[in-house]
Length: 103
Image: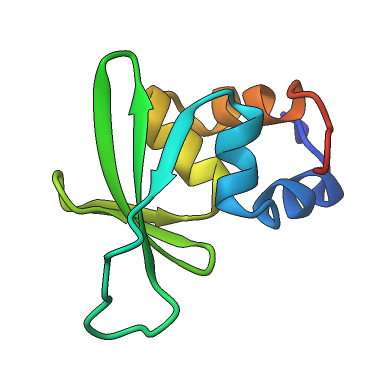
């Protein structure tokens, strides 16, 4: 069985900033301006709304962690898998078919 996606495609998707991915997915998100991370100084917290659910994501660089479910991952592919409850292939296809504004 051959690869469905090239290494170049996957590297591009893995390098998408998480907030850019949220924008391109058409999801509403808002930064918590009052959030003060305990450990990582550059960490931020975002509230993401999707299908009447609100996710509370702590983001440090390309890593994210849902404060409510205590689940996390790294990069846009993992985030799509988590938010949409889909497998790797479906997440990659979803990201590849997004409008490429700024990505």
